Amino acid sequence: MALIITIDGVAASGKSSVARRVAEELRLPFVSSGLLYRAATVLALRESLDLSDGAALLAALEHFSPRLIPDAAGNRVLVGTDDLTGALHTAEVDAHVSQVSQHPPLRRWVREQLRLLPPPFVVEGRDMGSAVFPEAAVKYYLTARPEVRARRRGAERDLSVEQIEWALRERDRQDAAQSAPAEGAVLLDTSDMNLEQVVERILEGVRA
Ligand code: ADP
Ligand code: CDP
Image 1: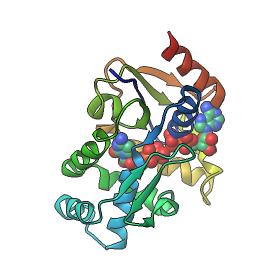
Image 2: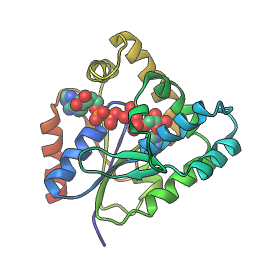
Image 3: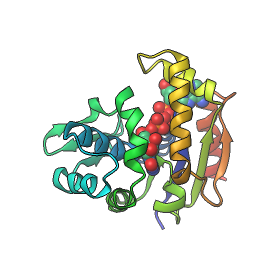
Image 4: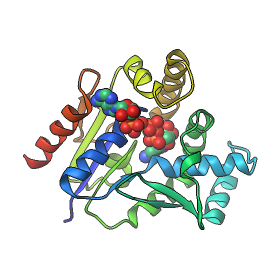
């Protein structure tokens, strides 16, 4: 069976940076599943949809059909020829994505898109090891203390570290249902590790 490595974890725990570096070392593609939820949120906000209306959100996804492009330099999301990538990581999307992502029909749509991708690959998100690729050979779950995650994300958002930490805690709370570690996942608290140490630890696990 072709290798699938899942890296799940809480917001700003380092999933995408780590997945990207691990994939680079193993010469595999990496896949950022959260971008599809972020794209659904951008489309819903642009269309002024009711974010509590799962059927309307699913209809929008089916209509616009956003495609995740697992580029090694950074995953992108396209709608037709329109590149949504630059609109995905804003404070507004951060604030609404958990509400959008909790709808089961929408989660099924994302799961189906992801399962079309041909392994091997490294994939990161919340439920990659538990719900989407339970058959994965290697599973990790990253955490870090909220204040550490807020400091790290501080470099990427135009908000104070306190505001970011509040938003991260809020998103952790809303994401909890779809974010439980997969059975058999190795838990890694990255609070006191740098990026390369986390990558090295995962590579050791893959090679073991
Ligand atoms: P996630 O995908 O979980 O939201 P990111 O990979 O976007 O997290 O990481 C958030 C920020 O934290 C990035 O700027 C990244 O470079 C940095 N980062 C990630 N892991 C570490 C680490 N172990 N040590 C220091 N900085 C990190
Ligand atoms: O990088 P960060 O953790 O901040 O966010 P992300 O991975 O891009 O995910 C954004 C949001 O999408 C999360 O807060 C979840 O609400 C949702 N998500 C999910 O429900 N399941 C996934 N597999 C990935 C993301």
